[in-house]
Amino acid sequence: MQNKLRVLRAEKKWSQAELADRLGVSRQAVNAVETGRHDPSLTLAFSIADVFEKTIEDIFEPSSPP
Amino acid sequence: MKVETREPADRDAKYLKKTAVLMTVFLTLLAVQTFALELFDLGYAGKILATLAPTVPVFCMLIVTVKNYRDMDEFMQRVQGESLLWTIGVICFLSFGYGMLEMVLGAVPPIGVIWILPTVCLGSGLMNLILMRRYHAE
Image (tube, rainbow over all chains, first blue to last red; front, side):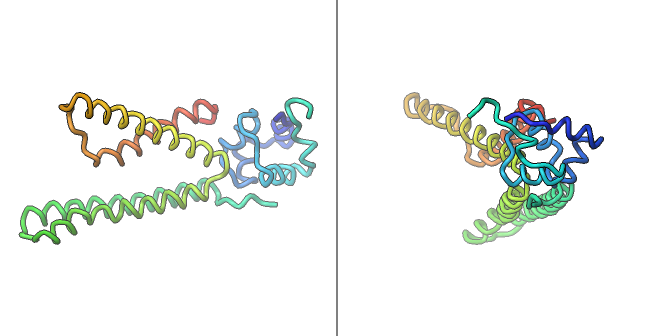
């Protein structure tokens, strides 16, 4: 899954560690989601959307069209 | 909606503290066991109790580790789970092969079952490092 996490994080000037603190997850988890090595669960995806005040669809999109 | 996990730094600190306490209890019981077996005539039941006493904190360590795993975020659970799966798989494969050699060749050096726990702990730790590198998550 592709995502705009890095761009959104840069807009807020947050480090991965800062974003991880806000989400209550490890920095490694944030890095893994950002680099596409880990697809977040629904709960985490909602938390990410909540933190950036966007919808899940604004942040995540499938790698290939359904 | 907030992810229901404890802050990673708090979780790690609590886990390390509990591990340190249990390791201290383990080493103390090990020392008591050694002296008791050497110095006293404990009888059969007494020897069994003294020998197994250090396994109690080891079992408590298992409970602490499972609780720590439940408190981890989803990505760290994935890494820990996969590293444990690989470790157990490799140990099973090696012991199976060794067992077959034992059946066919007869005289192979015996390996005590006491080495299973330290091998799983060490193997799991090593696999953790490998997988963290693989996921570029150092």
